[in-house]
Image (cartoon, rainbow, N blue to C red; front, side, top):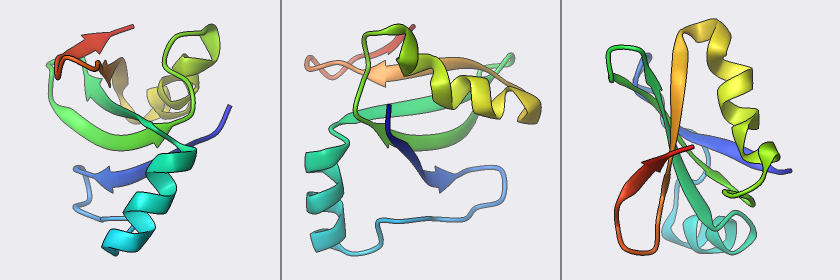
Length: 84
């Protein structure tokens, strides 16, 4: 599975993509938006992924558990964020 963090709300950093063209290209490769939250529901990170429905879709959460993330939500086609 491929995934990438695009926004870090803990440090305030914005990662790749930085331009509109980069966003369009990246979203073709990684079409699924996700968010990582702590146990208080505070948003820590946003990112993009190529999977939102298999066991692999948990990889970003597994990676950022050490930072306090306990929940991953993917954006559904209807515009609702759903926890896995």
